[in-house]
Length: 323
Image (cartoon, rainbow, N blue to C red):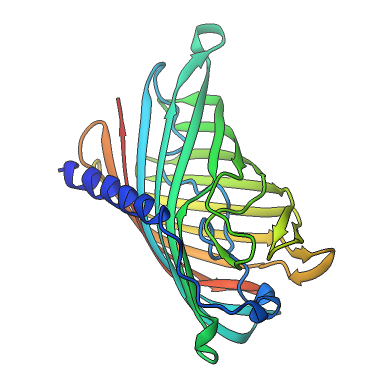
């Protein structure tokens, strides 16, 4: 049952990686770059502002010592903007196709293996296209590999009997992704990024589970933004909550609400985009295809935004297995 999912994920990753070897098509003339610096502040890894560490149900469960977890994501997202103070200014629309490969390995440490640590790696590949309805010549696209992300998760508390878990995650993003300084649309961010988050999972009776995830993200500067400008970004904060219902032992339904604050950007010290202050809702289904594998399908969109690009619809298919 899982083989087609694995094949599809790997095929998508290979396809996009191959496309990355070719030069991306970009029809934007150079004189428009100054105008688009505010209109199209896009990196394909996160085309619409959201929590940087996208954790989903069951990610908070610590695994036995020596267990490896491999996850493949395939997603598509549409966005529009630019939004400024809750009002849409010169219109742009676009979409992103994204494939992510994540792997981590769990190790029990401390007295009687009381704690768990899990180093992790994330590889991404994506393709983004944007068009401006009022000025077709402003459209453009980019594809390639995203920035390499390395990190670790640490479980302070793991109660498998009562299904209670408390963990912390740190992920560092390195500027390894595809980036062309003169273009406003890029796959890589050409900067470092550090994301710290907590994850708390709590069973509510026999059929319900609650996940809470506060997050803070720190951004380095992109010193080659649109050529020779410096792009800076304020610290960003996110809070996510997920309520999951176990319809059967193998089928779960869940809903997620996420608030994002902070993250305003500056170009050479001058305000470029304000904080997004967006709210995102998601609905999803989780199916355990075996004792070691699961499939998740999620739909999400922004229901409110103040600044930046709005996520108008996102579908993510995720396959995960342990061995």
